[in-house]
Structure formats: C-alpha cells, structure tokens
Length: 542
Ligand SMILES: Cc1cc2nc3c(=O)[nH]c(=O)nc-3n(C[C@H](O)[C@H](O)[C@H](O)COP(=O)(O)OP(=O)(O)OC[C@H]3O[C@@H](n4cnc5c(N)ncnc54)[C@H](O)[C@@H]3O)c2cc1C
Ligand SMILES: NC(=O)C1=CN([C@@H]2O[C@H](COP(=O)(O)OP(=O)(O)OC[C@H]3O[C@@H](n4cnc5c(N)ncnc54)[C@H](OP(=O)(O)O)[C@@H]3O)[C@@H](O)[C@H]2O)C=CC1
Ligand SMILES: CC(C)=CCC[C@@H](C)[C@H]1CC[C@@]2(C)C3=C(CC[C@]12C)[C@@]1(C)CC[C@H](O)C(C)(C)[C@@H]1CC3
Figure 1 (tube, rainbow, N blue to C red):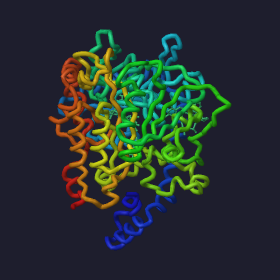
Figure 2 (cartoon, rainbow, N blue to C red):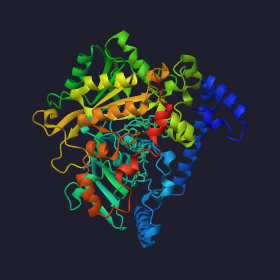
Figure 3 (cartoon, rainbow, N blue to C red):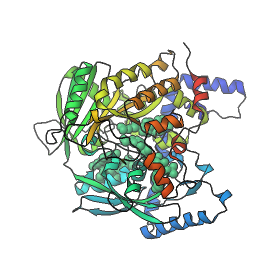
Figure 4 (cartoon, rainbow, N blue to C red):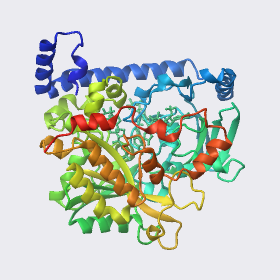
C-alpha cells in the first residue's frame, strides 16, 4: 500500500508500473527505510506543535468557549443557502477512524480546547477539555495515584472523541463502556447556547443521547470523568486454555457474566484467541512490588511484541508476572495489537527490535495523512479493522463466524458490561433480558477485535470484503450487538436503524435543533467512498 504514495503521478505509465512492481516486491524495505523514519519525524513535528501550543499558554476556558459560541451564532446569521452543516475543524487525518469524513464540505468550527481543568479528589472525578488526549491525562493522573476508570490503550485518542464515539478497556467488565464513566458534558448547541447535561438535570435526555452521537448533536467543550485509585504494578496471570468452550466459559466466569461477585472478579481481563481451539486468558490485579515475582517491562522497545509474548504461554503453561502499570497500559502499543505484523513481518525479530524497535509504532496520524484513494481502497478491501460489541453468551458463535469470514487470528476479546438504563437508553439498544446477569441491571458483552489482512486474502482464496462484513453486521444485529463506529460500516440506513435505537436520538435532535445544523449520525459515520462498487471491483473471485 505504501507504493501508491511514493510513486509520482506524473511519471510515464510504463515506468510507473515498473516502479510499483519493484516497490511491491520490496514492500518491507520501503516500510523500513521510508515509512518508519518518516512517521518518526512526523511524530516529532506533532510533539513540537503541541509544545509550542503549551508554551503560548492556552486561552482561558470561558474565553475559548465564548469564542465557539460566537462562531456558532455567526453561522446562524448566514443566509440559509450558505449554512453548511457543522463539524469540528480537527483534521480528519488526526482522528482515529478508518473513514475519511468529508470535512471540507461542512462548516468547520475550531475547538482549541486542550487543558485539564480540575481534579476533584473528594468526588473522584477529573474535569477536562475535549481535545485532551489519553497520553496527556495519564501523564497527569498517574503520578498523582489515579487513572481514568476506562483508559484505552492508544495515547492519541482524545477524551472528547471517545465520549462521542466510544471506548473500552480491559477494565470494562467492571466499569462498562467509557461513556458510563462520564458524569457531565458541557455542550454548545446549534443556537450557540451553552448547556451542562448530567444524568439527573433538565438535560438528562441530552446526556443519554450524546454517547455514540459522533458530534451530531452539538459541540463538546468540557466533560467530567470518574477516576480510580491505582497501584504501581499489575500482577498478571497468563492461562493457556485448550478447547473453545473451555476458554469461552472461563472468560464468562471471570468477568461475572453468570454471577455477580464483584470482589472475586479480577481488575483486568483480556483474552487473545490464537486459533479456534486455543487461547490465552489474562487476568490482572493492581499490586505493590512483590520480590517473589519477576518484573516484566514489556513496553520497552527491545522486548518481544506483547501478543507474541502471550502466545509463548501456550507452550510454557500458566505463569504470573508483575508488569509496571505504564507497561501494562502500553502493552499493545509497538505492534498496534498485531496490525504492524502485516506491514513488517520481521518486526518482532530480536535483531530488528534491538536496532530499530524504538521506531515503532508507525503513527496512525501519519498513516492517515499519507493515505491516497488507492491506499484507502486497499485498506478496506484487503484489510479488516473492526471492533464489535457482542453478548459474551454468544462468544463461541462470534469466533466461529469471524474465523469463517476472515480467517484472521489472533482475535481480541475484552469483556464489557452493558448497563440497561431503562426505556430511554440512548443509541445502544437495551440488552435482551436473557443476557442480563441475575440480580443486576446489566448484561456482560465483549469487544471482538479483528485487525489486519484476512487469511483468505493472504492465501488468495475467494474473498468479497463487502459480503463478509455485511454477514458479520447481520450477525451483530441478530444478537443485539453494536459495531464501533470509528470503523467502516457496510449497513444501509435501515439496517443501521435496526442495530441502534435512534428513537431518543431523533427526539433530542429535534428538541435541541440539531436537525439542519449538524449531520445525522448515519451520514457522519458511513464510509465516504462507494464501498459496494469498490468492494465488488476488488473481490477475489473463486
Ligand atoms: C505511568 C504511565 C501510565 C500510562 N498509562 C497509559 C494509559 O493508561 N493508556 C495509554 O494509552 N497510555 C498510557 N501511558 C502512555 C502515555 O500516555 C504516553 O507514554 C505519553 O503520554 C505520551 O507518549 P509519547 O510517546 O507521546 O511521549 P513520551 O516521550 O513517552 O513522554 C513525554 C514525557 O512525559 C512523561 N510521561 C509520559 N507519560 C507519562 C505518564 N503517564 N506519567 C508520567 N509521566 C509521563 C515522560 O517521562 C516524558 O518526560 C502511560 C505512561 C506512563 C508513564
Ligand atoms: N479502545 C477503544 O475503545 C478505542 C476506540 N477508538 C475510537 O476512536 C475514536 C476516538 O478517536 P479520536 O481521534 O479521539 O476522535 P475523533 O476525532 O475520531 O472523534 C470522534 C467523533 O466525535 C466527534 N467529536 C470529537 N470531539 C468533538 C467535540 N469537541 N465536539 C463535537 N464533536 C466532537 C467527532 O466529530 P468531528 O468529525 O466533527 O470532529 C467525531 O465524529 C472513537 O470513535 C473511538 O470509538 C479508537 C481506538 C480504540
Ligand atoms: C477496543 C480496542 C481494543 C480498540 C483498539 C482499536 C485499534 C486496534 C484500532 C483503532 C484505530 C485503528 C482502526 C486504526 C488503524 C489500525 C487499528 C486501530 C489502531 C490504522 C492505523 C490501520 C491502517 C489504516 O490505513 C489507518 C491508517 C486508516 C488506520 C487508522 C486507525
């Protein structure tokens, strides 16, 4: 895929074709000598930019918010014909979605809000501006002995983006999805007014509809999040399990899907599925230093990639080690879970790691910045990036279907609590009663992560990306699950409305005059390209 952007368009076709063939044959060399150093420089440039922004001192929160309100009021004064729908001016290449929302067709409003506003140790909350990243907040909270209740593993994700998209971590079987940890949102509505929405104030309907709204109801200018107390290490136990039912049962029991026993469920749970029949289940608890246990600084650049380290326990058997909290939270960083493996097959080689490990991972923003239409088509036809929230009771079926459709391992499993908030629950459909954990108001779901080049593509077997993804989405709808909307979706509008419950959302859009001001959720997250046509062209025929 790299080839398409290093070959200048103006070259004669024959030379261009030869160059492309050469580059494709030496793809990994191109990644090593061009892509990784360029990504490294790009990351440095972004850091300098952030540093300069800090040096300049941010605007006072109230002043910056008034400026956003003023811009929205000015937009209201435009003649109706000139009023294009509103979105933030954050460039799409900075965002962590695989789609490229067409911001240039919209009226872009800058949201220059990068500050952490207040830590309240009594209430155990932190108030932040929306462009604060996971990197910034962990840098601030961890030395003070706290962490967000749901800290996702990608340092570049913003706290606002996660609030309006969604987020989950290996602690989500206790804390739920990221939005369950948000206690209030401050939002600028389409008329320029500023409101604070909480679960029990007059804007409770807005509070419920904001998660999974992707900026289609208003501009977020501040949010308050729950925090938890931490310890310096995670005591992590790796348990290899054979037999699909065995590892699925184990994940259900550990996460509390069958019975709620909060004191016995570990703080962190993760499953890495290496084949239909073999998995390693990881359970972690906060811990102080224990001289009896080995300490593994697994995030250091010369260490084996985490999922490879995990895989080694299939042969070694059950093992316990201490992992410093930072290393635990960053465990999937260098190989971006297992995405980098498909770009650089020798990336986990000990010699490569010792010499060049520090160059990893390539920055998602760099990869997006350099994406050409050819690369974009390649990404969704020959690769798959999906996180899907599904009832854990159906875990065996999930694994069967994903392995038939994509032949891609490892698969990622994070258990996650989905709370039934009653009749007006927002965009997430209420969990089916049969999935509720007895005596509670929640059901245990899980994230199923499928990342990389499908085995069928590698083996040049028949593969139609659109048909495969639509099959996966159909299954998701049938069991009452939800697709993460940062990823490409292949549903029609009707199918989308079947997967999500948009009744409260549509009411809220009318009531707070988002209609005609912000794009509709479906329009905001649907792929910007004609996936059906491109998918058909790129399907591998049998
Ligand atoms: C203790 C700790 C916990 C972390 N937890 C998470 C997490 O939960 N989820 C996640 O996605 N990422 C986590 N990280 C990673 C962290 O977000 C990134 O390392 C950092 O914020 C930005 O990375 P960088 O490569 O841009 O900058 P770097 O060059 O790695 O860091 C810039 C500077 O900030 C310091 N620093 C970086 N992160 C922290 C931190 N969290 N606490 C104290 N000082 C820090 C570094 O020592 C350095 O001086 C954690 C890091 C640390 C040290
Ligand atoms: N572990 C996990 O849970 C992971 C989750 N993700 C996903 O990544 C995304 C977060 O990435 P990030 O790059 O930070 O976010 P994005 O920039 O992709 O923003 C996500 C959505 O929220 C909207 N939005 C963001 N900030 C504001 C604001 N201040 N006001 C109004 N709307 C706003 C964006 O609208 P607009 O287009 O107008 O900017 C966009 O539609 C989420 O979608 C999340 O699901 C990714 C990785 C891991
Ligand atoms: C719930 C959990 C564990 C989520 C983890 C999700 C990550 C694996 C995803 C989130 C964003 C993500 C899809 C991304 C990519 C890889 C997988 C990521 C990092 C990449 C970098 C793959 C290459 C693509 O061309 C492109 C650059 C568009 C994307 C960007 C987002």
